[in-house]
Image 1 (tube, rainbow, N blue to C red):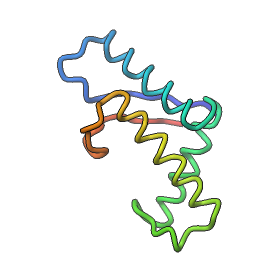
Image 2: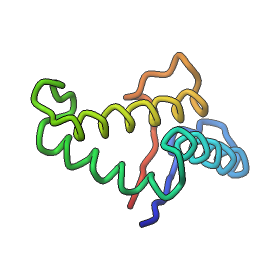
Image 3: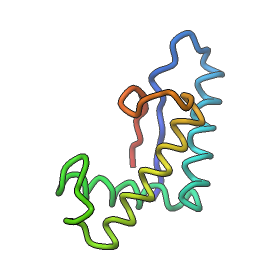
Length: 100
């Protein structure tokens, strides 16, 4: 299962800079999850959990496996956002799309 990533918030960035930022985002995301082949399945599982329980599910309603997926994805996503957009960037401001 593969994925594509597109960054949209690149005010004043050249196409080369945008592509480099996308590569940096991918690299950090993949390293955080452990391997590139894990991004799509973990992201897909995360989306299912969010669709079932909402954007910020209470840990009390999640199974141990669901909690692990949510924590892994959120940590990887945060690391990638910080690597590309900086540590003072709010997640809602990060403009990117992941497609599986």
